[in-house]
Every structure is written in structure tokens, then in C-alpha cells.
Image 1 (cartoon, helix red, strand yellow):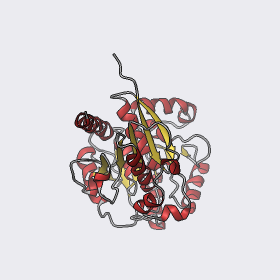
Image 2 (image 1 turned 90 degrees about the vertical axis):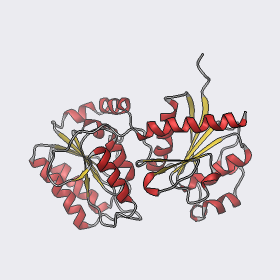
Image 3 (image 1 turned 90 degrees about the horizontal axis):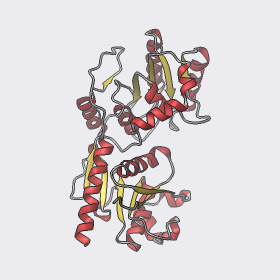
Image 4 (image 1 turned 30 degrees about the vertical axis):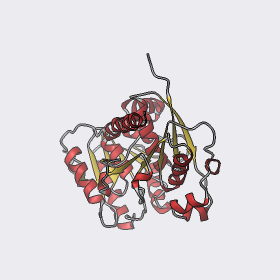
Length: 326
């Protein structure tokens, strides 16, 4: 007899790259056991956002403060620092709720039932699961569905196709004019090799770089540079591409690209690799990811399935906690 779905809250500040990590883990977990997934977007003022999560929880510890009142969820998955105080509030008022934080919480991990962190953050503990990169929502079914949604647009771009995923400025990396020029040269090189280009940028991409990609699009009928207007073709790009180039600043985009099983190349960004060096090494070892140098001969690899693996571990932790309570 099938189990009734458990309720799972997904908590974030609504930014796509943050929410999709928690949502991707919830969706992967629901493929093992049915979940009723409910998304909660936390909206805080600038001053409250700037406060540490512990101070936020000290100032606001009631569920109503975060729109979480009502029947408690069985599981709550949060990602991003704005999700920490709501998770602590849920645990305070409903100790039976199984709380999961995605990323390094930069506080005692034992405040949560489970912490899912990138292996390059080097966390360890009884309730910590480490993974290559971050959870994502990518599945073969999703890729096919998105490709069908953009079938006409993709059909206008002859194969082979290369997806170019461009990030931007962050705490550790910067898109300088020099690196941007290198990216444009890579795009031109691929065009000369006969590739159509599927280019997508992020909220962190500088406006001056966006203008160059729009110009490249307008000057060439083999280029589709998504402008941010209308439905997002990101997954359709991943599914429709033969090869993928990714700027090295984004853990999310790197691991999503590696989850396709397609050849993946990195594009340089200004800044020191720091702890990302471990991520690059893991992706090189498991997925043959290499810096783009014009050579398109990469060995095949098995698609990265870290989100699915971590979802299995989630249920192992959940069942162990449930058994200890009963």
C-alpha cells in the first residue's frame, strides 16, 4: 500500500540559484517517497537581511514572522542564509520537523537534523553529507520537456550546438574585460568550427558584457543569446547542446552541466580558485571537465548524479531519526 505523501517545505529568499538547490533536493527525495512540496519565499528588509542568522532568530523566532504558521511539515529544506532563522524557528516550535540546510551554515551544524554541503567546504560530522557541487533540478525528463517547449527555436539553430553559460561577479571571482574577451574569442572559435551557440547569462553578469552577447546574436543567425525576457530556455540549452562551456565561478552551473553527461569545458574568470580548486579537481576526475583551449576531444563520462545520491542519504537520516524517536 502506497504511503501518503509527507509535507516538505522548501525555504529560501527566492533567488533562483538558491531556491533551486533546496527544491532540487526535495524533488529528488520525492522520487523515492512521495512528498507534498510547498515553497516558501522569505522576504526581509535590507537591515534584517544584513544581520547574522542567529541575530535574526533572536529578533524573530515565531513562525508567523516567516509565514510558516499552520500545520508543521514533516521535512523542511532551506538554502541560503535567509533560510536559517526560519528553520531554527520551525525546530523550536515543532521539534518533530526534520530540518535540512543546504550549504555551509557557518554555525553549529547540530542546530539542524541534516546539513548538505559542498565537499570543497570541508565540513564533517554525524549529520553532514558532502557532495560534489550543489543539488540541482536537472533530470532527463526535465531536459526533454524543456527542449520540446523550445523546439521551434532550437530547430532554427543547426547542430552541432554549444551552450555557453556565463556567470559574473561574486565574492571570489570577477568578470573582467580581459576574461570577457577570452570568452568572446571562444565563441568565435566555435562558430568557425561550425557550431551554433546557445548563450545564457546570469543576474551577476555585467551589463556591458550582456551588450556584447546581444550584438553577437543580432549579427549571426547561428547565435541565440537569451536576453532574460520571456520563458527561460536554460534547461533547453543544456539539453539541446552537444558541448557546454561554463565560466568557472558558478558551482551550480558547473554541476548542472556535468549532470548532463556531455563534454564540459570551463571558461576563466579573474580571481583565485581558493576552495573552488577542490571542486575543479573533483569535476576533472569524475567528469573530465577541462579548461577550453579549442580542443574538443574529451573522454566520455557517466553523468554526475550527486543530487540523487544525496536524496537517498536524506531518507537514511530521516528514517534513523524517526526510529530513534519511536
